[in-house]
Figure 1 (cartoon, helix red, strand yellow):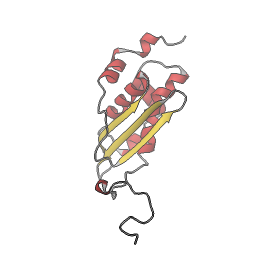
Figure 2 (cartoon, rainbow, N blue to C red):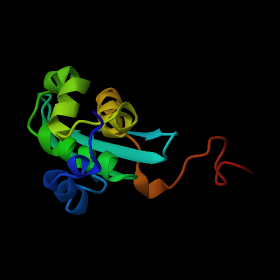
Figure 3 (cartoon, rainbow, N blue to C red):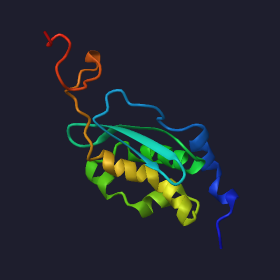
Figure 4 (cartoon, rainbow, N blue to C red):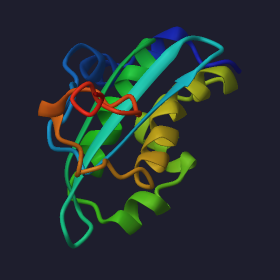
Length: 148
């Protein structure tokens, strides 16, 4: 039996879509990554701020896409705050689908699991703390002041 559209858009799913938890970019993120689903165009960006002892102090997401991809990202970042790095790494795809709630077809599961995939890679993607935003972009090669 195929899940009905009504079940997919349960109230808690719509709540996370219409009033997402921590949507936007986290200014002082320690870890960050972005991914997309090329089949449907969904995009998710996740920023994490980890404490020195490896706990998620803050988790934020941004992106564009369907109700399922955006609502599941909101649910995920809310669920991950306060967790240890080990708990993040051990959080499974099945647990993500259970967190979302309604049963999804395989194609819609990909929408739901996009944020989970991005979170798993963000854990291994530290943000370079040495870059100074005031210097502007770095393109390599000599700067104008170094040329004579």
